[in-house]
Length: 239
Ligand SMILES: Nc1ncnc2c1ncn2[C@@H]1O[C@H](COP(=O)(O)OP(=O)(O)OP(=O)(O)O)[C@@H](O)[C@H]1O
Ligand SMILES: [Mg+2]
Image (cartoon, rainbow, N blue to C red; front, side):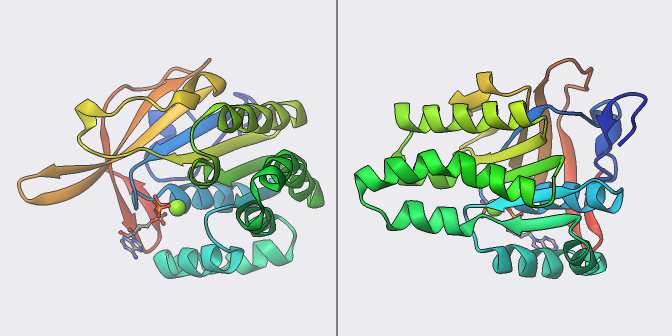
């Protein structure tokens, strides 16, 4: 973390300059993107870099098992294999699938109860290593379980409020149905967050490209352009 300017550098090539130095410390960001745009990879790479900079980090996975997240990270980014060392040193924890399993296995009334428990489960994972930076991947899992009604809004609201109360910088991921960028509606959760970053698939001249746009970032200047990025063996990089 750059303590002078109070931002956390992401270490993602080309990304920090787009957001004027890094992610504002203790802010809550929503990372929204189409399927396979790299939400999991990008958010875990940000934690990997922060943990390497001596900041304890927690990756809370609801979509996939911790084993699968770790395996995919290693196969996507073969140059970043020392992620195991960060886990052994308690600088990085990947956990959360037990909560997801409880939510998906329960009946409707039990599901409401286990959704309430999700907030305390997330807090418990964070406290295991006193994490200062957390990712919750993803809110799409909750949408799948309970739809996008009032219950979903309440659980996201209490998750975000609790992360704010704990003073943990966080990134929560969600999907956006992809048609074309012009037709995308902003996710309904946007008002709860300090920042919104969107990832897109763009089609042009028969070639598919990945691109990122910072829609808002409270208290921080940032560029408002579309930036292409690629997923490489050594990490995500912006062009
Ligand atoms: N070594 C690699 N080089 C280039 N691209 C890769 C590599 N490994 C994986 N990918 C791409 O990364 C994408 C998956 O990234 P990731 O799982 O982070 O996306 P996501 O947005 O979290 O997906 P989901 O919508 O399933 O949650 C794959 O669809 C694949 O296109
Ligand atoms: Mg994912």
